[in-house]
Length: 321
Image (cartoon, rainbow, N blue to C red; front, side, top):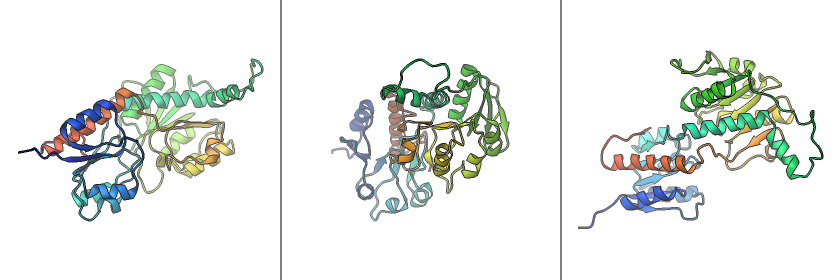
């Protein structure tokens, strides 16, 4: 008798090794052209498959989760975040949800450090000058950035990635670190001071780096917080686009009320407001915090680990719901 394997839909291309593992175990449908699925397609998939393997770019809302005749029993999200999934509805509907934490900590912290250096040294404006053939001579006074040694780095969200970023900045760049976190953090292996409110980070830090989860009803870093930034401050975000009030940040950058920013995430990805793309005082990256072959493979493998555990009635390594 032929074994009936669970039907799994993968919404985007995954590294070759991950797709090969899925194909060996499941009745899997892969996304060969790597195009984003529509809400209609996602709804149809909910009634056809046993499992869904989406990414953080797939918005799986209550309407999709409540598809009539729904067959999906597990959503194995490929990403540390899961704000793209309505987890409250998933819980009510009895749908398991998992994520892929830990494996992307160092890669994302590296990108945060890259953005800190790129923003403070104005590398985008400098590279643009070269590419537009506007560099006529060496100058000691044009296009000067800011040194980070001895400056204050403020971390908002001192989880694994926040700590990895702070450690790099403290031990590698000689920055002083303060941080805000909802719970008390102890046992750090580098010097850092916890403060009691986001406002304290905003008013004290020279560089602010966001490492908090998104998905809230309003931005964690709002217009009021951004208004408290020093004129010489830089804001870095490698967490989630909805962590900050993007409109307020654009206004602060456009008016040169703050020195600059470095962003790897945006409110409505992949749409980036034209005004933001045209600014010289912001470095923009297309959500590449975890974009190494090693990390993306590890993320995919961890998603498959969650699937394997679920369909074997074992404890899932990274269950959210």
